[in-house]
Length: 152
Image (cartoon, rainbow, N blue to C red; front, side, top):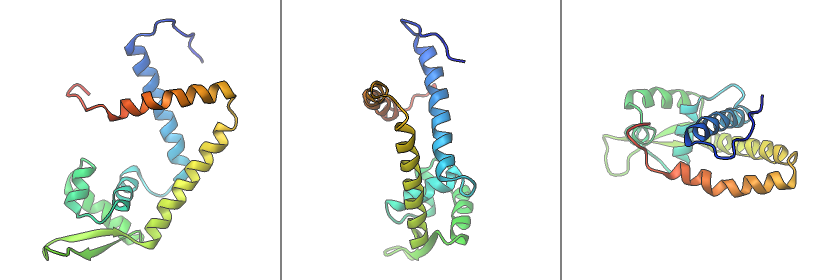
């Protein structure tokens, strides 16, 4: 049920509505490219490795999780042939993880699927709706780039 537009909505109302809408959007986008297989943590690790090789500890830090948890994620990705181990070039005690050709292809396939879904969805919008979405992009981007607060 659609809520009547408040001429002067409160930040609390906007926050609740925006979180709900973005959550639905992200779930829909994720399910388009990933109907069953990889979970969010696995996809995050693949995305990080697309930027270059990394150690388990590096990936854990980037994804804000414990190294033990990242180790389990990487083991599954390695078993699926999406990542592989390589020796660290300067520290023989460390192992780097890199995307395999299959991992790179999986990332590409998911990206194409998301973009195709988005293009088809946007084709159903009226021109003024597209302009409104376009105008909102800088604001949503700004929200995503604000520093995290202790209250979140």
